[in-house]
Length: 133
Image 1 (cartoon, rainbow, N blue to C red):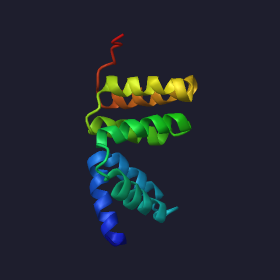
Image 2 (spheres, one colour):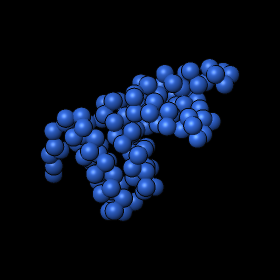
Image 3 (tube, rainbow, N blue to C red):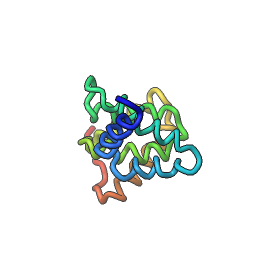
């Protein structure tokens, strides 16, 4: 595929996974680094997210864990908690993934990520997570 075909394909994948939230991220880059926005769409979604070896659901679990571990990624976590819900993860599964990340990334980062998830759940009118164990 050429550059524009990759972008068009990536935009389709981005819309399926992230919806409007992903579009807002790309739009926010337009006046400062349109090339970065292009790469998010063409490379991250057109090439990486579209690979068949992991399902979109599994890719979101990985993404939530990595963003939590990195720390300081609350904007991206907001987008990807929404994306995780879009691809079929439940609020309980998301909360459990963020809880599990505390073992490897530390409590402060897991707490910050969980508070982002709480905000997203509330915005979407989802009920509170019930502890299962």
